[in-house]
Length: 238
Length: 112
Figure: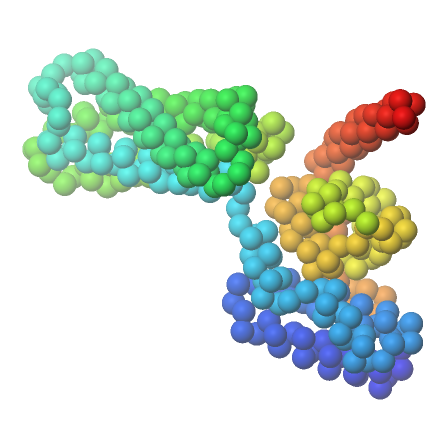
């Protein structure tokens, strides 16, 4: 391409690129790629004998409106539904779990638990609390997020069938339960520590937060590995 | 000309199929699709990139920044191992659809 014409193409691309300046949602690399595509179209049209204005006009209509493109690119960069649902479910679980532990640590137990109970009783109590909190937390949040999905118009039956026909949620729940039961050991440790500290003490709070947040983070990691590894889950949730 | 729903549904298998031939960049990829379909399938150029991002996000496609013959920065795409498997799956699924439709039309022609 002649240097003068190349300069004109540069100008046209720069003008088009300025349309993206006002849009924060699009990444610089994406803008660069789209601009290169725009440039390729303009160059090809010029090679075919079009005038610059006509070539630019064709490129604009072929590539599309910057605002629409930014929106599409932004959606494409969003994590898959699987991750979004998991994040919501696990944040809900973290809150529920941490709250339960805090209730216990602060001596505001809702059950007949007493710190002078023998160790095996406390361990059993802790395990029971872990399993119940995991089950209730995840099932509750999961079903809420499912319900929101089902509310999205038009695809209710398809989604309901895919839920029923899929082992995905069951397998994923199993991952959470696995991590929940592993952390039940830490529960026991926490309760033993709690027995040595006075009631209404804040001493166990950092541990409660650590366990409450650590469990879902590990569960998410496990579910992510599972999601990557198992193609059926991949199709189900993506 | 196929309706946009069909074009959208076929975008993923088409991109995977084109990338089976080797590494390429967006503009060239579109050109290949246009050429293979004899111009019957035309995508809005800008819509290609969100599809590529999703494929990349799902681990089916990888990309790298390189330099073109003209010395410009370009993003090149290629299939990952999982992408090759997905391309093969897509091929089998679309072949089943194609075969079924052909049979249905064949029977319809004989009946008519």
